[in-house]
Length: 423
Ligand SMILES: Cc1ncc(COP(=O)(O)O)c(C=O)c1O
Image 1 (tube, protein in one colour):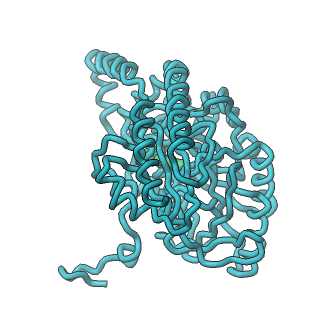
Image 2 (image 1 turned 45 degrees about the horizontal axis):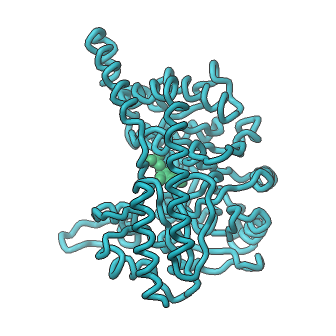
Image 3 (image 1 turned 30 degrees about the vertical axis):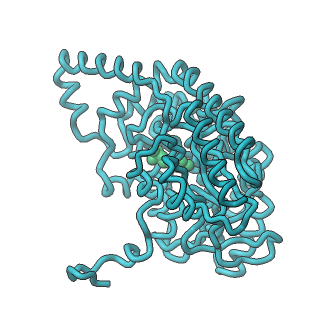
């Protein structure tokens, strides 16, 4: 369609809006419960790493020339080796750190891996199953590429496997297609903060095995767990054939735009082909910095940050329980977010944010964008597929960035404003 300057923009530009989270970045507020920004970072460690690397570059100009240059599309072998070792030692992913390092692919953030996987698997009309609600950074590219997004109910333990089984069955009848992908964030999901218990991980893996569906396991928050880490679904995938596992430095290290994934071989080949045209390669300098971090400092850094995130979570949960109007919140055991749903179906968290919260110096993310703009959902009884409708009386509250004091103060303020509004 031509705009006033006469350019013929692609169709998607008319129905895809700017990411709600990106839009919200323009607001500078005192009480920031918006995007998933890490607020506890080992900045001293990163400063030391950079001094150390600078000194090496001064002594070794060949190393500097290489590190400031183009590198392999899938990432530098030395960095992939470091990550392969950690994935195998700590997360028990079945790869051999020494000689299967090439199973690890480096991308510009896990966001790029999500996009490239969709880009290489999805033709218009293909079906993808996601939880309802789901990470908008996955939903929107899926819709943009023409996927039929089929959402499935979640409870306090995440997506419900029996409902997924029903969704696969009904997808065959209604769309004439077995879904290509099941997308989950098993550990402290974005946006709900829920964690899939082991029994559900096993059940979802089995469903994907039985119906030949690629299981996309987005582990963005797997290292930010307050009590204990559950086994990744990828640990069940002994032949590296069923699960695309994504990790990211963004939450557990720093936002240097580095994601790392372990993908079935044929998926990896296509993703690398795609990345070769998307950005050619990921900057070597950031891989150098993170290689130091992951090989020497990560445990020490997480031992500091995770308990602090837990403290912030507790500050938020306590204040919500005291000051929020009737509704229900989730009870995360890790990650960055709490999800809240008002008892009042007419409460519109997006409208309230613009009119009341932002002028009061408070920012959260309204729940609406975590439902597909165009999509389908399995009905609660599991017997039908109908159009997906956003639940606008919900919100995602991030506890990662503001300090505990600011969280307690801001949540009290927000709770009182909402109570005044809803009654
Ligand atoms: C669930 C999930 N996946 C992926 C991403 C993208 O992360 P990045 O591109 O920074 O690695 C995010 C970011 O917030 C996320 O919450």
